Length: 278
Image (cartoon, rainbow, N blue to C red; front, side, top):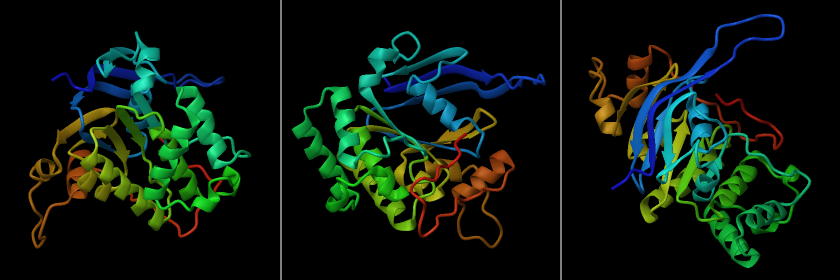
């Protein structure tokens, strides 16, 4: 069976020069090779600046690689970007909205872009938001009046309104309050178990990587340094003396020689705040 996502020898660099100073190009991705099977939840973990978001932007046709090939649903993202886009949806850590418009008005706009009938779009959106614990009475409130967690739930509903084959999730729970984080994670787990949707997830969270993903790749300085099932990755590291088990954090520190920095979640997150991506 043909993989849903396939990358072969993908490279990407960015010009590090400024107006007054020349710098060497920054290598964001180096020789990226992997495949994602249909219906799989594939995780990508790595520190900030490791290339996670750059890779997702390439898969979503927002960036083109300098070298190599990337295919989604059998289509080349460089040669056929417009054919790729109807099959994918993306949720980013800093999802953009028309802040003065309501949640439903934003969703209705997306539905029209994808040609989804409004009655069907509303039913789909309310079904997703119900699963995510979004209060119905806030559905017509302006986005600027909604919390960060509520906005991210709208972003998930928007991504699923056109019933994509591939869902690209770029750190979808970063900065969320604990309750919203758990609700989004639980819904991703349900999608993984109950649908044929293929999910590509980047995350800083070890729980998400281990409990939501069928396989996990670790990326560091633009290179994939390990790829396996979570259980297989943990077998790469010898258990520490006095420890009951190896964790994915142990694997990360062993392979990248870096401390894992967990994102702090505040009880309340300002609706207008944005988090830095890679």
